[in-house]
Image (cartoon, rainbow, N blue to C red; front, side, top):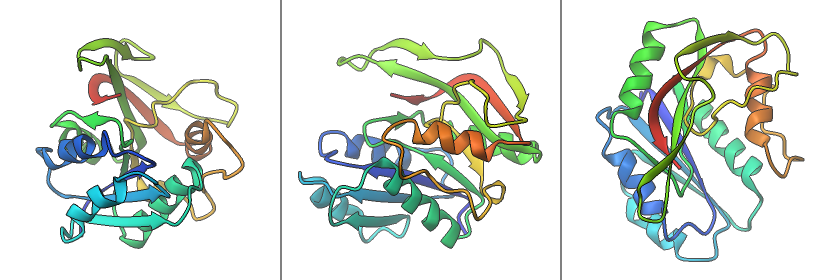
Length: 205
Protein backbone atom coordinates (compact mmCIF):
# COMPACT_ATOMS: atom_id res chain seq x y z
CA UNK A 1 0.00 0.00 0.00
CA UNK A 2 1.33 3.43 -0.92
CA UNK A 3 1.36 6.05 1.80
CA UNK A 4 0.69 9.31 -0.08
CA UNK A 5 -1.78 10.09 -2.84
CA UNK A 6 -1.03 13.22 -4.88
CA UNK A 7 -4.11 14.65 -6.60
CA UNK A 8 -3.38 16.52 -9.85
CA UNK A 9 -6.42 18.13 -11.51
CA UNK A 10 -5.67 19.32 -15.02
CA UNK A 11 -7.56 21.24 -17.70
CA UNK A 12 -5.74 22.12 -20.93
CA UNK A 13 -2.38 21.76 -19.24
CA UNK A 14 -0.24 20.68 -22.20
CA UNK A 15 2.34 23.41 -21.55
CA UNK A 16 2.96 22.62 -17.89
CA UNK A 17 1.71 19.19 -16.83
CA UNK A 18 4.95 17.38 -17.68
CA UNK A 19 6.99 19.66 -15.42
CA UNK A 20 4.54 19.04 -12.59
CA UNK A 21 4.78 15.29 -13.07
CA UNK A 22 8.57 15.40 -13.34
CA UNK A 23 8.74 17.20 -9.99
CA UNK A 24 6.80 14.30 -8.51
CA UNK A 25 9.04 11.72 -10.15
CA UNK A 26 12.05 13.56 -8.70
CA UNK A 27 10.88 13.27 -5.09
CA UNK A 28 13.28 11.83 -2.54
CA UNK A 29 10.25 10.05 -1.05
CA UNK A 30 9.04 7.30 -3.37
CA UNK A 31 6.04 5.81 -1.58
CA UNK A 32 3.37 7.74 -3.49
CA UNK A 33 0.75 7.40 -6.19
CA UNK A 34 -0.39 10.16 -8.54
CA UNK A 35 -4.10 10.60 -9.13
CA UNK A 36 -4.49 12.72 -12.25
CA UNK A 37 -7.97 13.94 -13.15
CA UNK A 38 -8.15 15.26 -16.71
CA UNK A 39 -11.09 17.66 -16.55
CA UNK A 40 -12.22 17.48 -20.18
CA UNK A 41 -9.07 18.97 -21.74
CA UNK A 42 -9.33 19.88 -25.43
CA UNK A 43 -5.58 20.32 -26.08
CA UNK A 44 -2.85 17.66 -26.05
CA UNK A 45 -3.13 16.93 -22.33
CA UNK A 46 -4.64 13.47 -22.92
CA UNK A 47 -1.83 12.54 -25.29
CA UNK A 48 0.78 13.60 -22.74
CA UNK A 49 -0.91 11.62 -19.96
CA UNK A 50 -0.97 8.50 -22.11
CA UNK A 51 2.80 8.27 -21.64
CA UNK A 52 2.21 7.39 -17.99
CA UNK A 53 -0.62 4.90 -18.50
CA UNK A 54 1.59 1.83 -18.01
CA UNK A 55 3.22 3.15 -14.85
CA UNK A 56 1.35 1.68 -11.87
CA UNK A 57 2.17 4.75 -9.79
CA UNK A 58 -0.29 6.73 -11.91
CA UNK A 59 -4.08 6.54 -11.73
CA UNK A 60 -5.48 8.63 -14.57
CA UNK A 61 -9.14 9.57 -14.91
CA UNK A 62 -10.59 11.41 -17.92
CA UNK A 63 -13.80 13.46 -17.84
CA UNK A 64 -15.56 13.60 -21.22
CA UNK A 65 -16.27 17.31 -20.70
CA UNK A 66 -15.03 20.09 -18.46
CA UNK A 67 -16.82 20.00 -15.10
CA UNK A 68 -14.76 22.41 -13.02
CA UNK A 69 -12.22 22.20 -10.21
CA UNK A 70 -14.55 21.03 -7.41
CA UNK A 71 -15.56 17.98 -9.46
CA UNK A 72 -11.96 17.16 -10.36
CA UNK A 73 -10.77 17.52 -6.77
CA UNK A 74 -13.67 15.42 -5.49
CA UNK A 75 -12.93 12.63 -7.95
CA UNK A 76 -9.33 12.64 -6.76
CA UNK A 77 -10.48 12.45 -3.15
CA UNK A 78 -12.73 9.49 -3.94
CA UNK A 79 -9.83 7.61 -5.54
CA UNK A 80 -7.59 8.37 -2.55
CA UNK A 81 -10.17 6.72 -0.29
CA UNK A 82 -10.65 3.76 -2.64
CA UNK A 83 -6.89 3.13 -2.56
CA UNK A 84 -6.86 3.32 1.25
CA UNK A 85 -4.04 5.86 1.29
CA UNK A 86 -2.75 7.32 4.53
CA UNK A 87 -2.11 10.90 3.35
CA UNK A 88 -3.36 13.17 0.59
CA UNK A 89 -1.47 16.00 -1.13
CA UNK A 90 -2.32 18.41 -3.93
CA UNK A 91 -0.37 19.44 -7.02
CA UNK A 92 -1.88 21.81 -9.56
CA UNK A 93 -0.95 21.11 -13.17
CA UNK A 94 1.03 24.34 -13.60
CA UNK A 95 2.92 24.08 -10.30
CA UNK A 96 5.73 21.88 -9.00
CA UNK A 97 7.30 20.45 -5.85
CA UNK A 98 10.78 20.85 -4.44
CA UNK A 99 12.41 17.37 -4.32
CA UNK A 100 12.15 16.98 -0.53
CA UNK A 101 8.52 18.10 -0.25
CA UNK A 102 6.83 14.74 0.30
CA UNK A 103 9.58 13.32 2.52
CA UNK A 104 9.64 16.37 4.78
CA UNK A 105 5.89 16.48 5.21
CA UNK A 106 5.54 12.72 5.64
CA UNK A 107 8.16 12.64 8.40
CA UNK A 108 6.49 15.56 10.17
CA UNK A 109 3.03 13.97 10.08
CA UNK A 110 4.37 10.62 11.28
CA UNK A 111 6.00 12.29 14.28
CA UNK A 112 2.91 14.42 15.07
CA UNK A 113 -0.04 11.98 14.98
CA UNK A 114 -2.45 14.54 16.44
CA UNK A 115 -2.07 16.87 13.44
CA UNK A 116 -4.77 16.66 10.76
CA UNK A 117 -3.08 18.93 8.23
CA UNK A 118 0.32 20.49 7.57
CA UNK A 119 0.83 23.22 4.99
CA UNK A 120 3.95 25.08 3.92
CA UNK A 121 4.94 28.35 2.32
CA UNK A 122 4.44 28.68 -1.44
CA UNK A 123 7.05 30.21 -3.71
CA UNK A 124 5.93 32.26 -6.71
CA UNK A 125 8.16 32.42 -9.79
CA UNK A 126 8.22 34.72 -12.82
CA UNK A 127 8.42 33.70 -16.49
CA UNK A 128 12.15 33.13 -16.10
CA UNK A 129 11.41 30.64 -13.28
CA UNK A 130 13.01 32.99 -10.74
CA UNK A 131 11.56 33.16 -7.25
CA UNK A 132 10.22 36.66 -6.65
CA UNK A 133 7.56 36.26 -3.95
CA UNK A 134 6.69 33.92 -1.09
CA UNK A 135 3.16 33.27 0.15
CA UNK A 136 3.79 32.85 3.85
CA UNK A 137 0.97 33.82 6.23
CA UNK A 138 3.29 33.52 9.25
CA UNK A 139 7.07 34.01 9.59
CA UNK A 140 7.62 30.90 11.73
CA UNK A 141 5.97 27.56 12.46
CA UNK A 142 2.51 27.96 13.95
CA UNK A 143 0.10 25.48 15.54
CA UNK A 144 -3.64 26.08 15.44
CA UNK A 145 -6.82 24.54 16.77
CA UNK A 146 -9.90 25.30 14.67
CA UNK A 147 -13.11 25.68 16.66
CA UNK A 148 -15.53 26.71 13.94
CA UNK A 149 -15.94 27.26 10.21
CA UNK A 150 -15.90 31.05 10.48
CA UNK A 151 -12.15 31.32 10.68
CA UNK A 152 -10.81 33.79 8.15
CA UNK A 153 -7.27 32.46 8.05
CA UNK A 154 -6.12 31.54 4.53
CA UNK A 155 -4.80 27.98 4.51
CA UNK A 156 -2.37 27.13 1.67
CA UNK A 157 -4.36 24.24 0.17
CA UNK A 158 -1.93 23.50 -2.64
CA UNK A 159 1.05 22.88 -0.34
CA UNK A 160 -0.88 20.82 2.21
CA UNK A 161 -0.64 17.22 3.33
CA UNK A 162 -3.80 15.84 4.92
CA UNK A 163 -4.27 12.78 7.12
CA UNK A 164 -6.96 10.90 5.20
CA UNK A 165 -8.73 9.33 8.17
CA UNK A 166 -9.54 12.86 9.37
CA UNK A 167 -11.75 13.32 6.27
CA UNK A 168 -15.14 11.99 7.29
CA UNK A 169 -17.44 10.29 4.80
CA UNK A 170 -19.74 13.32 4.54
CA UNK A 171 -16.99 15.82 3.72
CA UNK A 172 -16.85 16.63 0.01
CA UNK A 173 -15.82 19.53 -2.20
CA UNK A 174 -18.71 21.93 -2.78
CA UNK A 175 -19.79 21.73 -6.44
CA UNK A 176 -21.72 25.01 -6.21
CA UNK A 177 -18.58 27.10 -5.66
CA UNK A 178 -16.83 28.57 -8.69
CA UNK A 179 -13.82 29.62 -6.58
CA UNK A 180 -12.39 29.04 -3.08
CA UNK A 181 -13.71 25.49 -3.03
CA UNK A 182 -10.36 24.54 -1.50
CA UNK A 183 -10.70 26.95 1.44
CA UNK A 184 -14.27 25.85 2.05
CA UNK A 185 -13.19 22.20 2.11
CA UNK A 186 -10.27 22.80 4.49
CA UNK A 187 -12.28 24.93 6.91
CA UNK A 188 -14.92 22.22 7.20
CA UNK A 189 -12.22 19.56 7.52
CA UNK A 190 -10.40 21.35 10.33
CA UNK A 191 -13.31 22.05 12.70
CA UNK A 192 -12.11 20.83 16.11
CA UNK A 193 -8.85 19.57 14.62
CA UNK A 194 -5.20 20.62 14.77
CA UNK A 195 -3.37 22.33 11.91
CA UNK A 196 0.26 23.37 11.47
CA UNK A 197 1.75 25.94 9.12
CA UNK A 198 5.46 25.60 8.35
CA UNK A 199 7.30 28.52 6.65
CA UNK A 200 9.67 26.30 4.67
CA UNK A 201 9.05 26.64 0.91
CA UNK A 202 8.16 23.23 -0.54
CA UNK A 203 5.78 24.17 -3.34
CA UNK A 204 6.23 26.46 -6.35
CA UNK A 205 3.35 28.28 -7.99
